[in-house]
Image (cartoon, rainbow, N blue to C red; front, side, top):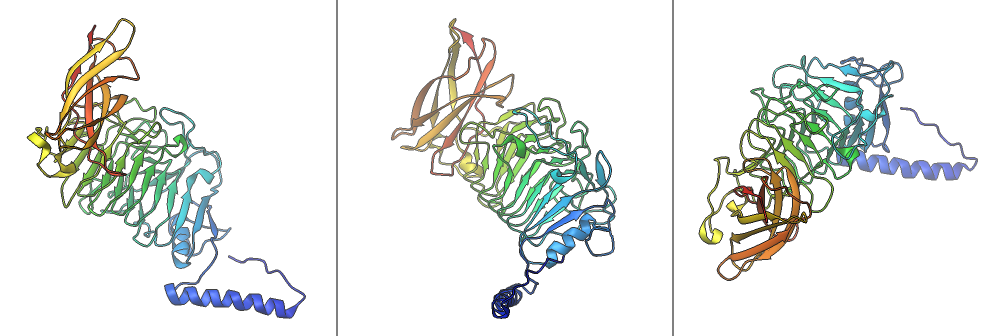
Length: 444
């Protein structure tokens, strides 16, 4: 790209400026081996694949744009302005190059596109589709390498790749506002994953401090219809956040478009936040072929909080610690394993008065002299939690016992069921239990 030069009348001033620029350029080249530039913007204007190797106003494909940003150090932006209306499909004939430099790939820059504005579901209009059906065996969609920290992927439909739709190997990256595993309408499955070369279907994370969605509706991802798990947090994926996403539903957040595996799989990673600590940012995790959230050990797999989400109608458990079905409570909670096999609450009663107040009573036996958050949910059936209805803190005594009574924030009708989870309180980490056995609500 050619930038305009400001001509100065004072030759000495010009020489001084150029001297500083040359020094900065040489410093960066010595450190990275790449030419240094301030953040630049490249505009994809073609649905083609290979191109000529450059990226200019005559032709710039996505492959070319990624290649150029990889060759120049700096935080760059890839925009889209492909002529014509409607969805523009980019169909790579081989795997796209991994992203190695910080870059924002923004599909919402394509004319006619717009992010979600709904509190429930998503009405995002995404007009850039990456179709991986011709990319080859084992090929994933977009891969952020270990050097691609602070990259952003937003506003794309990513489907039909043999590997994961998005793979994150680096740290502090963001995936937001995408449809991953569906068509552009968000109602039909065109899954990623299921190939033999890699694990993962929708989003595969193997780095730290990455964000999949957020508490803002505009950043909500739809991760559904994939041929493996929806979101995978792999062994090295610590301190990541998964917020506000639709995992296993159609774009309305209600219809069945489940991933074939688990909704969210945590494999040995620690200190991840799945769902918000306060209002806003709950995930909907439903209709998946495995568990809603499965946490298994391959290393530690502790400190993972699963909070305030809507988890329902999955083939397995809502939350499964160990991937082996219901985990029994043990006295004093001394066992170890995924999330330290945190004991779950035991609900003793749930009553709704004629005035509309629902009161839930129960108890928790766990580690002694510790504080725990008890989250309550209403759920049609099974060990899941479709609707978050309240939270309270309890402190166990020297024997590890605590009783609780919670008047819920929302009324639950007689005949419906409630469930609960327990999460240890330890700063910004904590172990969330499986869901308790459900308790039917009776009229008082």
